[in-house]
Image (tube, rainbow, N blue to C red; front, side, top):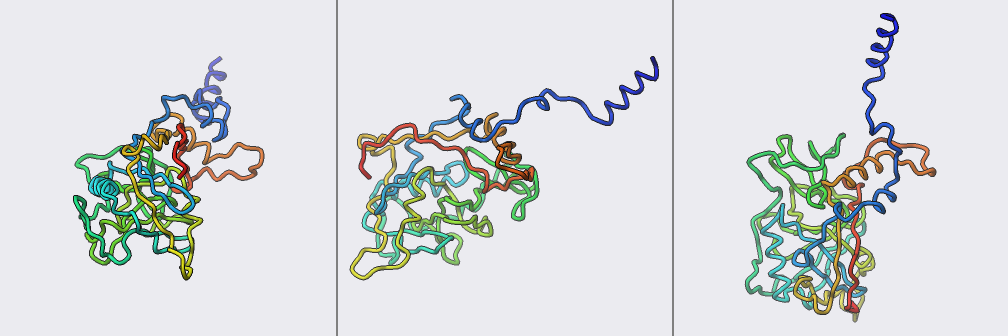
Length: 296
C-alpha cells in the first residue's frame, strides 16, 4: 500500500497537476469568433470613428483617445471644419504607407492646430494592464492589446504605445518631433515596427483598407491624384450614414482564447504549429453591424 501511494505521488510530480482546461477540446479561431456572445464585444462609438471618402469608397477609422488624446481630438476638429475637403492622398509608397493631407502646406485651420506635441507613448504613474502576448519581440519588452489596439510597453508598463501594424492611423512629421498635426498616413503592406515611438500612432482602420490599396501609385496627367472627398466624424453624419461597428474586447475571455487558437492552429490544413504569434499577426475581430445609407 505504501509503495502504491509513493508511485502515485511520483507520477503526479512527473506529469504535473491536471487542469480542467487540459481536457477542453481545442477550437479554431473561426469557431471562437462565431460563438462569442455579445458580452465579448464592444460597440465603437460614432464619435470615435472617422469616415474618409476616397475615389473608390469610404474607409472607417477608429481613433485611439486612450493613448494619444491630443491627436485624436485635433483630428476630430480638422474633420469637423472640413479641412480635408479638396485635399489628397499625395504620397503612396508600395508596401509602406499612403499619406494624405495638405501637400503644399497652404491650407489654414480654424479651431484645430497645425502642429501638436508628440504623443509617442502614453505615460502612467502605475503599471497599465494589457492583454499581454508572451514571447520574444524585437522592438519592445512587452507587447499585447489594449482597448482594441495592438500595443507595446516598457518593462515597468508605465509607457504604452500603439505599434505600427498594417492599417494603423498615424501622424507624419518632419525632423521636429512636435511638427505633426495635419498630415496623416495609413500603413499598408508589412508591419513597420521600426517606426514605433518615433511617430504618434492614434488609430486603426476598421473597414476599407481596399480603398487605400486601390489608390493611384503615380500621378496621371489631367487627373487629380488620389483626391479626398471628405474626412468626417461619423457621429456628425448619422442621418446619412448609419454605419456601426463592433470590435471584440481585447481583455475578454474570447479574445484570450483567440490568441491561443492563433498560436496553435487546430485546423486540418496545418501540419506545423509554432505556439507563437506576433502582435501584428494577431487580427482584432471587427464586424460591421449596421449598413450605410450612403452610396460612398
